[in-house]
Structure formats: structure tokens, C-alpha cells
Image (cartoon, rainbow, N blue to C red; front, side, top):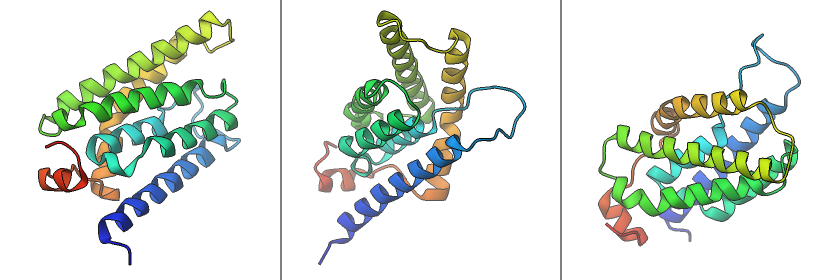
Length: 179
């Protein structure tokens, strides 16, 4: 018999994959609702960051890496580059999750914003070093800003719609995380 904690973890992992599939499906649809060409936020990265800051056991690194590699293939990005950068950013936030658990949301938002900015800069620099064609710098910067501004929305949806809440200290101790 499966214990309720494991069942809940696997249910949220499956939900993460389902949400990733839905986001990818919407992004590859061949039409645009808006007339402008504003870049949208990187919802998958924001979702992974929001979940790892609340419940790191719901988004294991292998799952996030598999989802990001899948999106690299579908969006024809350099294979594994963005996936590796997201994984490094995710693990950076996971390592600091215990310290940020009791901090106000504004501090979490600033920390995630810095990580997203560093990820964007790293991706741009690596692509520039290898002379890979990339979008205009203003579009890259605009997507980074839109992603940072969208983080509170993703957190609110994760918390109030999906039900991913911050881990209580007793739960953290029971799951093996430092309190």
C-alpha cells in the first residue's frame, strides 16, 4: 500500500508534467491572440521555481531536466543548453529553500528575479560565444522582465488554484529536509 505522502508527491509530479504539456501545446499553436509580438513569460521555468520554493519534493531535478529537454527539442533551441541552465538555477534555489521558507515573498521574488536574470545572461553569452543566431537583445531582455513580473501570478495560481503551499517545518523534518 502506498503511503499518502508518496501518493501526493507522485500526483503533483504528474500534474507538473501535465501542466508542462499544456503550456507547450498552447505555445506551439499556430496562431497569435495578440497583434503585437511581445514575448511571453517562460511559464515552465517560473512554475518549476515556484514549486521548488514551496515543495522541493514535488519537482525532482530529473523531472525538470526531462521536461526542459523536451521543450528544447520542440522549440528547436540548442539541445540541453536551456535545460542545463534551468537545472542549475533550480538547484541554486533548492539549496536556499530552507533559508527562504520564513522570509517574506518580496525577498523570494527578488531572489528568483536575480536567478532569472543570471540565467538569461548566461544563455545569451553562451550563444554569443558559439556564434549562434539569437533574437534581438531587447526581445530577450523584455522576455526576462515579463517573466520576472509574472512570477507572483504563477505563485498565486500554484498556491490558490493548484494547492502547492509552503512546507511546514514538521513536514520538512519528516521528509528529510533541514529545518
